[in-house]
Image 1 (tube, rainbow, N blue to C red):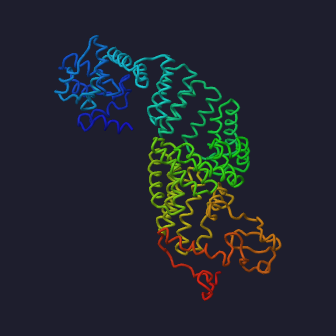
Image 2 (cartoon, rainbow, N blue to C red; image 1 turned 30 degrees about the vertical axis):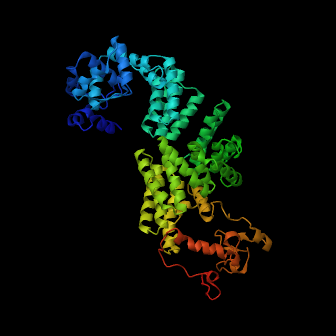
Image 3 (spheres, one colour; image 1 turned 135 degrees about the horizontal axis):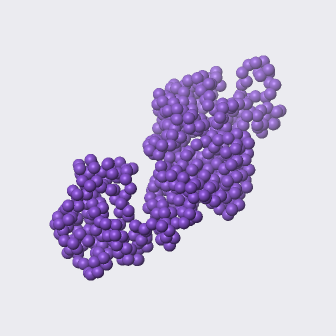
Length: 611
């Protein structure tokens, strides 16, 4: 960040490129908004101004401190300082000396360091008088006026702090989050301890959304030194967890966060309660916690309200806490909410998109995630963007939309690397592995899966670890290497952390829309009719308990099938559509296809032995 600013301020000047790094780490001159200069730089650039008339130098001093290049404001403020009306013609000597570019409406310094030199060469009293004069002429523009009122003052000024807080709210509404963070920080500096903590927390939250994690933790440390109250501590905990993507942990940590959420709700802060509950639910999705912690989360989600609630955060929490138990209600509410996606509500899409992923509504998730990504990108809210991009890449890979999946994974990796978020780098690598596996590039799928594993294991992200296996699985299936898959998805086996994450992903893969089409040991309608058979671990291995084939030790053979796995003439159109899909999606064959099923080609075809 400092590197970019040095390059911007130097504007190609060789002397500045050598000198500015020496002072880049120093505090900026109060109220100037410019980098401090070395004495050598100040002499080099200020010397060009020293020979100009006094009135011209005064106009340049006001122009250097103004946040806008509007000529009328600069001339009016300089006239207030001089006690007499000044004319535009007084700036012509500066234009002739190539110090500024001048037109009827604006004045612009030709080099940023000339502006810096003019600011730094003025005394503290001169700078304060300039800000007072600018504040006087900007009464009709409160957002600009308050910055000049707040410049060069110290101590407690609650009136000015309130104005800065209002300016931050307006800046946030128009998407200027960086301005809002700076305004809240300055408001906190002018506040007494109680309001100071609230304003620092608001600045930390916006800093996270901007992706400025290096700023979040120092702000939270300042809050800790102010002896915050219970609600402020809970909010600081939530922001700190946002800034550090990590697993939910054991039951104790989950219970502590859930208790903090409910205490916030009892204290009247419903927004904070839902924000903390969503944090717990989303982290539980990354690494499935212990059964007791999962039960605590489900019970807490039930206490928040019904999925049909108007607040979409409750819907998202319910979807992540219990995706199978409440799938029908969640899907119905999702379809209603998705109809309003045209309203450009980025925050609603940011919750609805992941909820649709959780319950397997991939058709809804695609549109909702696209809306969320576009809105976050437009608003510059980089903190949330890596997660949304990886989810978007996953959904696009599901439908072989490479034009979305590949750029989403690349952008997620680049942004997560910049923000130092290894979890989302691993998630982007997992998406790459799936893309390569579906497209038949076995080497690329293996490399991407290995990269994802190297990052996901230390980060504790078992959901990402589970998803990375599908790239290898798809590549092996495409190459016809079915036998090697028997031991492949080791990270998904029960008994290891995150095995539930693997089961959720497998359920999504086996179903057309993501909901589980079978469960081990669950009785089907057909088996109830035929005497107590149960569905086996593979949907095609349907057999009756105690059948001769099983008792004799032979491999059980399919008996008819049920649901989407049933065979017969009524299933022929679906099999034909499935067979035609790869060509329609632009996929190339990567191995010799298996022998055809005679039902697809007529009675003359010979039935393969494996069927």
